[in-house]
Length: 126
Image (cartoon, rainbow, N blue to C red; front, side):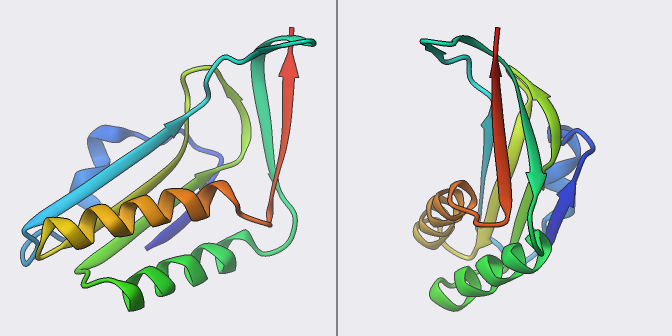
């Protein structure tokens, strides 16, 4: 499943949205806005927007993960809108009969979420 949303990601509801009946391992990774300090100051917030079909790009990532690893399911969520320090930017989740594939798929999913071509980022420092 893939989701592009401006709504906050609720970690307490994520596990229930991943089929676990045939999985022996479920790996979740939440990326959060971190405070970075640079010449312009410390991160106040980041505005994320889409340019193009972000949902289609997420579907492509999920399909490639499912072809590359032995998975029961994948879940990729990407937020848009204004996110403050500490808020969840994205989620990559993979369920598999074995932990090796679940961890590897999740790690690759995280890397692919970070490099999405359809996501536009504007970091604001204050």
